[in-house]
Length: 244
Image 1 (tube, rainbow, N blue to C red):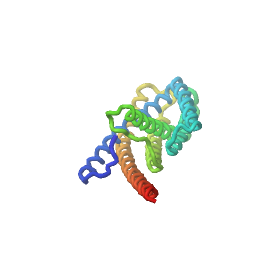
Image 2: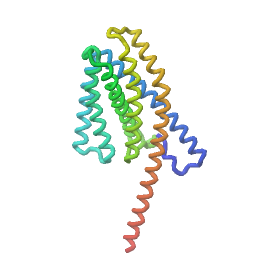
Image 3: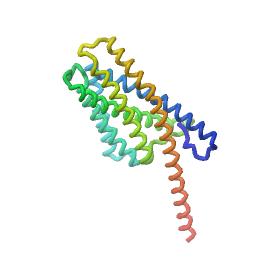
Image 4: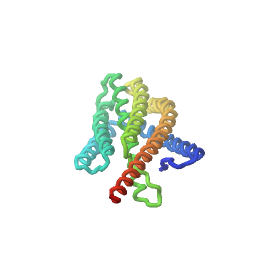
């Protein structure tokens, strides 16, 4: 929703960074809450785990179909879509393995590792889907400033790295608390689990979200400057060819 920050004064750049950090912090906390909710629901409800797993398998298949048909012109978007599809398939499998009703005997260490991978997959899914949703909405609603999808390798790596690091952290924190619960835990134990987990993840997610937003905006500004220079160079070459 923000511009690239090019052509701004020092004061405007500072304000631009603060706004980006605030938006990133809010988005980071929101994604953290979503991931925690999904992890908890998948753990305690077999029905939710099964439905979520099947839906993720279907979404992964749709993304693979899009990539196969070449519906994404930008190669970096296509690469991220492949990563997204793999994440969906892995997430779908973990939905069955982490549910205590379906597979109650999974070793605690394996559960923590699977929670880490599931957290990373869900975080990447939510962050990427949110970015694409905002991009589509700003293209459809002409009165809003357009937000472009990821267009370069640096932007793709920034989003992927930020989502994976944050998701692994959230998954490990949740899994570490979850494996300590007894097999027949009740509602009070679940409430204690959520409170203990979010006391750690929410503040950290605000910081990581802010850092990721600022990094993405910086990378976007560098990328836009590069693409502008290339465009100007191509225009100069074309003008020289016309003169000849």
